[in-house]
Length: 296
Image (tube, rainbow, N blue to C red; front, side, top):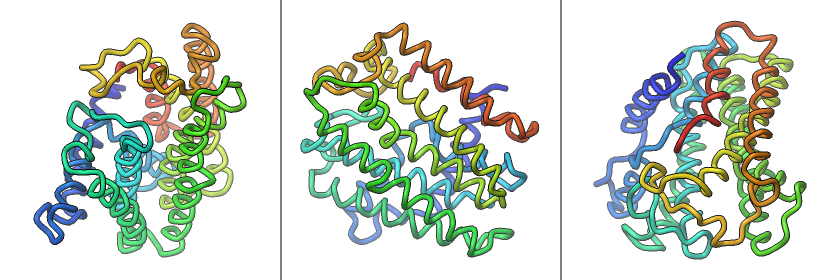
């Protein structure tokens, strides 16, 4: 399977849906919506929306039917990047090869754009109940999943731990907790929301949670490695920022070679979690391998 082509196809679907579902840049208040669209349209792999769609396909659902929730995951991810780049957090001036939202606009507008995207995400999940074949109970379950994984028990909590750990001597337990919150949680939300909307039963959801854990940890370890050895032009953001902020990362704790080995083992665990799924889950299998082979 050509994963890059698959992701590109999913990205085109998601970007067309975002253009329909997100207010135009000139909607009032225009500066807010301009900032919101500026950040959403900066590109990226659109991995999380693809995982929503492929999680739905894996359990026999239609990928087109879950496009509103796929867009919701991209909104949450983009809001988190806007806020992470702020001076009060990681203080990064570059994102995906362009000025960060707060550099292109201003800090207050960036903060509000992130707030608006997070709120819009839950509107989009609710609107998914209007799609053929998606009932309100499934949309409600997906909304709850996203709320749990994006909040203090998930992504936001992971970011708080990350900030609190700066300058501390890292431990395996601390780094795993940070990665589980910052990265695994939203990847889990993507896969599980897609599956829930597609009508997954409890055993399938449990297997997909195991898949998402392995995928998410491997993805974050690969990101940590790229921050050490990656190319800034390819990544579209500064490298070495983890070291500059004395962040707790896998390479700091285990070194590059052992980090690569552990990432590969986690991908194997993710793929093994899909043993009871048929060929419909092949895109998920391929994406798991892709996350540790990428250069950006």
